Image (tube, rainbow, N blue to C red):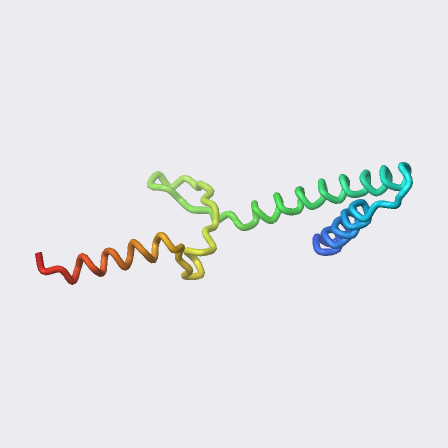
Amino acid sequence: MTSLSFEKALADLEAIVQKLEKGGLSLNESLALFEKGVKLAKFLREELGKAEKKVEILLKDEKGEVRKEPFDLDREVGFSSEKEEEKDEEDEDEEETPF
C-alpha cells in the first residue's frame, strides 16, 4: 500500500463502504471487503498522522529550546471564529462608549 495515494485509498474505502451497505454479498465477499477496508483505514490514519506532524510548526521558547506548536490554520490565513468576531464587535462597542 506504500505506492497508494491518500486520495485513491479514501476513494477505495468509500467504494467498499457503499458495496457493504448495499448488501447482496456473500459472507466471504463481505469479510474480504471488510478486511481490505480495515487495511485502507489503517493506511489512511497513518497518512493523516504523518501529515499532522508535517503541519506542526517548530518554535523556540524563552530558553531557546525548540518546542512544537500545532499549526492554527485559521490564525495563519486570517480567518476568525464567530466567537472571536463577537468579541471584536464587543470591544469596538466598548471603545465607542465615552465612560
